[in-house]
Length: 209
Image (cartoon, rainbow, N blue to C red; front, top):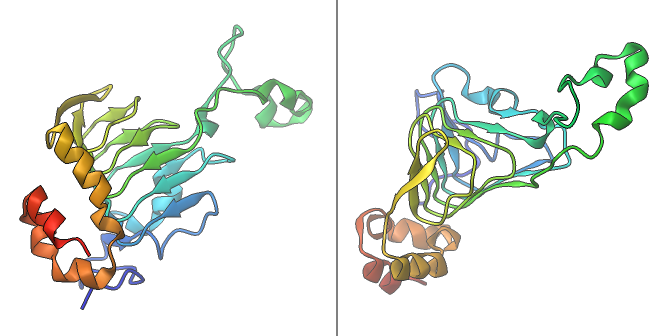
């Protein structure tokens, strides 16, 4: 029987692990089934502690079967400040007479939605900057700061994160993306877990429904 994607804590006795879909409530966050966050301190605080400066309208879109280690943070476009004048300080948000100058905060740079593909693994203390696109099957090493897009099935690391290598040759990456095993019916995934975790691309292709 497939695992239940509606269970908040899927690992008995391990409250540090939460599935994100049953946890998140913001209409600005979309997350697929089985994606999880692991944090020994406050895993259920992901929406407040790990998605920062999310004042909208940009969205955080996360695919299915993603694994986020402790300290993964998404910096959203609300973190931007003006940089075209002498000061970057956001005076209008502090209230008082300064609030009449809210127009000074319009038109700030916006890089659009932050999109995380399916089957993405983000290591401990990874920071994702606004508007980044992380491809399917990608991995970001612990401590990485993602300031540019990461392609499908690439391994990236560093500050700023750079692609270290790809997990497969490009023809196989194209095949994997086309197979999109993460969209298979749960029962079919259940029947082919071993192939999905440890098989070859040929074997995965042979298992497609």
